[in-house]
Image (cartoon, rainbow, N blue to C red; front, side):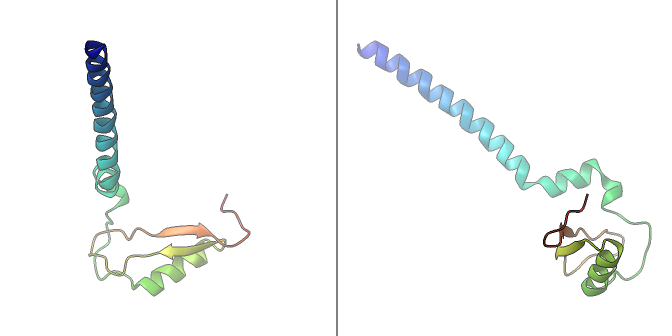
Length: 98
């Protein structure tokens, strides 16, 4: 009986270790989602224009004028020259963006 319990404990422990390792690897990839996306799609995160970036208020107003059904819900307060500002846009209440 002891040998069976030891084998069950070992098999269960190794299975759980495999599952936790997989969860750890996928979870750590999610943490670096922005960096991975910038590596895969660099053209989405860099601009060809140079100069001072637009202020957050002006940028949000331009986006909302370009997409009237959307509202800006997240905007970076600072951006570097040559980097694109990544904004979060959501539909206005009761509207859809599609």
